[in-house]
Image 1 (tube, rainbow, N blue to C red):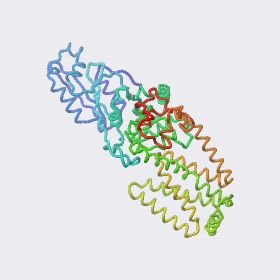
Image 2: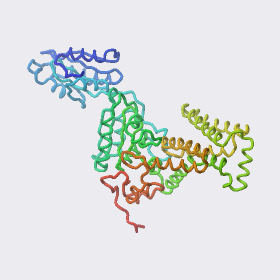
Image 3: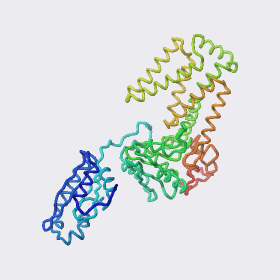
Image 4: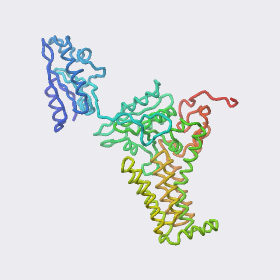
Length: 503
């Protein structure tokens, strides 16, 4: 049970030692200052989380050096030593008073240094965080041809700084919450207060407050705890490693959540439109971006349909094919010993196995295994008569199409849905194929992301506000003078409306 600190420094240090018993990295440094009246002090910090050089040079050494602290009288000790140390004794800009052990222990475990003063009912906390961290690099999962090369890291304050660098607006709010009963992970909620919808913001705060879990290790943990439908394979929250993507989303009236120890930032709400858009679209010309977006929507079709249609037509409806094509299909399957359903499931599963094995092996070796393994296994399978050449082509096209979808989670959901369509088609033919499409479509239409339909703006929401100018295609920038309507922003205009007759 936490309590307030005592005026007896020894009792305070004993409580710290007992609470953190067994922690070999706990560093306690006791010393005295003052010539007329000796005052006992102690610094407490965790080795590896706090900067030893800062504690030595700007805390302990500065206390011995300050002339005003050497001649304290008994009266001065009782009335002003804490204030004197704050004002004159410590060369640090980020210091504060605390009087409860809960705050003290949180500070110690977060990398702060706590200064205890004998005879005082308050302690002083110094921001001495010095976490081991990697440098800012280009995100490997979201590489671009044109655009910034910066990516988020695992340090919360570094990440908020990368966003603030791009949004120099006094209306940008950064709210920090503690999530996790044991981990007490810092979670930053970012939004632009004169743009974001208040009801939407209130809902996000409510869900964060209602989280009751021991620890939040990564932003993925938080995502699974606050999303609308945790049983759905489709992601209802977007994630990114790019600060420019987060800044652009905040300008649209969306909310970003940065979790300490994670380089992936959550952006919400998420819709099909946002998951199929790439950051690079806004650095390319509108014609180039529009063509790429149409290719991405085509890739969704190529992921879901070809294998299921192959099974349905081969088994139940070969008569709908042109005569020459049906002859070729029958000839290519003469030596195949498996039904089309087994053939499709076997090849799709093999492709997923190659993809997973390549992901687990970092560097160029993983890519080599995926490419070489696919070529060798596919060629050998055809020569051995296990599968037909057409099946290999279909699986290869489907696999290539998955890499055209910007969101890895959305691509994974599409691949899972593909297996369901294959099973339905293998059992009921084209009727099963249509039933599967209806089930997937109904599920997508029923999904919400923090109260916003996941199918926006295709469900009708936002069409009046011009959302469709930035979905299937990307209109020229001068025509995108309104923010997306699906976020219901307070301030809808982001630039002066262009004249329609402008030449």
